[in-house]
Length: 531
Image 1 (tube, one colour):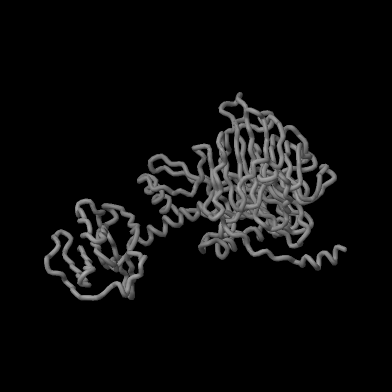
Image 2 (image 1 turned 90 degrees about the vertical axis):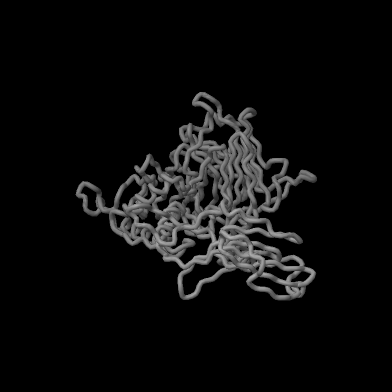
C-alpha cells in the first residue's frame, strides 16, 4: 500500500493519505489536521523510518520512498519496485529460498513525503538459513593460535572442498590409540589440554560472538609441528549442501583477503584469514597480538597467500612498499624483552626458531645462513652484544642474519629542519613504520614516525642490497615476535602492502584501539629499585 504525507507551510495543514499500491492518490486525505511544525522541527532534521515489534513476530518493509521540499514528492513507479517475498513459504521440495530482509520500518516522515509501506506478520521459517550463512562467515573470521584456520574454499558446480590450515602431526586420537605412534609425555598432554581449553575460551568468551563447538572429540583436535593442540570447527553435511547452494548463486563470502591488484590493506584484523601460530592471536576488537604477555614466547602472523615478487623466475625482485602500525607494551616502564620484526620468508613454518634474541624466526644454528632466504626489518628493545646491536632501542635491516646490515636508533627526521627526533619503542604508544624497496636502484628504505604524523621525507635507514639474491619465489609476508625473561606484548594495529606501487595509506581513525596500559611497577618505583 502507499502513503502520502503532506504539510502546507502557509496554512499549517497536515494531510495523510493511504491507498492500495495499484491506485492513484485519492483527492480526499485519510487524516487532516492543522499544526505549526515550526514549533517542533529544528532547522536541521533527519527524515526516515522507525519500527518495532511486540508480542508477535512481524516484518515491516519499505519498497520505495520519495521526498519533495516546496514541491510535490516525485511519483513512485510501481513497476520498478523490488518484489516482496512470499507470505507463505512453498514446500522445500519445489523451491529453496533464502530471505534476508535489508530493513524493517514504520512510517514517520516530516514534510512533503511519499512512502510505500508494507506491514506484514510473517513466520520465521527462514531464520535457520540466516543462522547458517552467519555461521559460515564466522568460521572464516575465527583466528586463534589453538584453532585450525579456514583459508578458503574450492568449488565446481556443487562439489565443495573447504581448505583448512595443514597440521603436520595429524589427529590427537592417533597418538593415544595408535600403537605405531610415539607415546605422548605428561608435559605434552598437559600442553594439549591447555591448548584445547584456550581455544574453547576464545570461542565462548573472547571472540565478539559466542560460538559453541558442540563436537569436542579427539578426532577434532589436530596437532601442529610442536604438538600444540588446534581445534577443528566442522560444518555438517547439511551445511555443506547449503554452502554449495550459496556458491552456485554467487553469494560472496568475503572474508578472504586477495591481492589481485598488487595491494593489500588491513585496518584491524577482525574477519581476516591471517595465518597465526604460537602466542599470536587476533583479539575480539581486531588487534593482532603477536605475544601474549608470557615469558620466553614467540608468535607469528602471515598473509595466507604467498606473493610473487618477480614477474618470472629469472627476473629480478620488483619494487614493493609496506606500511604498518605497531605498539610494544611492557609491564616495566623502562625495559622490554625482546622485540618484533616484519619479515619476508619462503615458509611460515618457524617451529625450529627460538624466542628471546632470535625474535622468533632464527636460531643459533641457522642464523647467518644464506639458505634462509629471509629479509626482515627488526624493532629491537635489547642491546645484544652477540649481534653487535647499537643500543636497546633500534630498528635494523636484516638479511638472513640478525647481525643487521644497517641499523639506527628508533626515531624520525622532521621535515622542517631534518633534525633527528628520538622515539621509544617501549613507550606503549602506537607508531608507524614504512619499508620501501626500489627494484631498479636496489635500495631499501625504512622510515618511522608517531602515528599522528605523515610519512617523513627522509628515511631513518637506507641501504643498498639486491633482494633478488635473497628472496625465493614465491614468498610470504608477515610478522614475527618474541619475549624472553620479561613479559611484553607486541601489537599490530594495521598493515598495508603494495607491489610496484606505494602501500595504501592506513586510515588511523579506522584502526582498533589499544587496551589500557597496565604497569606491574610504577616508573618512580622502578627507578628507585634500579638505582
